[in-house]
Length: 110
Image (cartoon, rainbow, N blue to C red):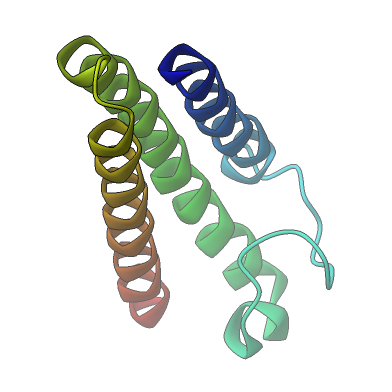
């Protein structure tokens, strides 16, 4: 059962990384559906691309950290399903919160 969640968590991390790369490479034009959308980023293309490139870079890091943590935690807690899932959820939450904090801090500097 835990092995299935390892695959799920790695897939989630890969999805985060995959969705972040176009943002990081400045390939996503301003839109209402995809990207780091705030009133400030929507007000200027320069700010949009700069903020999304930074947020994309932070998301790639967050996704990579989550993948690594899911694998390491699996090796440590593979016999304890509840502890493994809880630890992965905590790591995901922390990486997302740190990513958001850093992205908003960068946005304020633009």
